[in-house]
Length: 499
Image 1: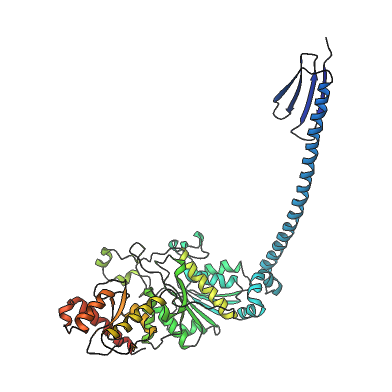
Image 2 (image 1 turned 90 degrees about the horizontal axis):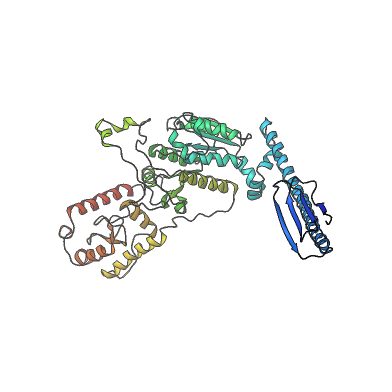
């Protein structure tokens, strides 16, 4: 009987997954080389037939050399990766530890520390520069309204380095407002919005002096709320009530305090339609239209910067929700609101849009006060449309026998006529596509009170039958259309005294 020879080569003695090479020569008709791992205890046998006595030794040496080479390479790679990872982790860890130490110092600091302030606002300093940041530090902001728009304005002004800001709002955080407020959470429901903002932001910017007024801004308490603690350098209007908004804008305008106003974010959903421009350039915004008309009555034609959305209404999109009929049956609906003259109907709001409005306002204000170059495109959605409508009126003058195509209506008046006087549609058909301007009464000269918005087909028929055909208005138009046109002319006559 031939002797049995077994060799065991331990290739990874320190590992819990020990790899061993077992070579057995049992003198049988075949030799076997077996590999297994201690952890799994499963064997794999490789048969080598018809080998001589020395052949198995050659195989064993070859296998051992190959495995050893692979193992050495693996150890070298692991060692390199370990050193690289350690170096990277060390750098990141050092930076993180530094931030943690500075954050702790900021939390515990009781006074303003310029070095800490600069460290936290390093990116803003890099963007706005030393002079711009110094201007920001010297501002005294007053934000009226701390809801969906106002909360984002306050948050970003404070985060950006503002040193003093006053927040005025009478309202409390409601459960339904959590979809758009910048920082309120479930624990804040029922608490004053101004206090919620203050408590949250003091954890972010302890250097900022945040003053709060949990009361309604009115004309009667305007001086106390606005000037009671000093003269503000900027007023930001984030009110959603028309009467109060108009009062505040008139107050800021006549006190010569820089101001910017947020128009309506409710029922809006397209962020690409948001504009920054003077109140006179707003479009597709019922709130802006009402504010503009009321300010005209008070002698303010322009000079109020606004953020508004020019998104067109669509039957498929959200609308102002009406009150249920049973609420009207109960009596005066004004009694349903928390405060006199405040809205009582539900405004559908996509939670992101007030944030976009607020961030737009904060960005504009930061660039404005720091002197950073910015040139908003005003009325960017309708300029070509207004020019086409203007040209349609000039072309009509030629067709009806006027040798000079010049008309006493300026291109800048077209937006006013289309959007405000005629509500963006023909008073004859109610259509809002392929619009033109047409002279109305052939016996009167062209003026803002003698042009009507019509479709192209209606303009052509009006020329043929009224301007050139000498037919009467009653023969061509219904009583309802004529009454509507006369009503719109009456409104323009009224507002023209404030132009």
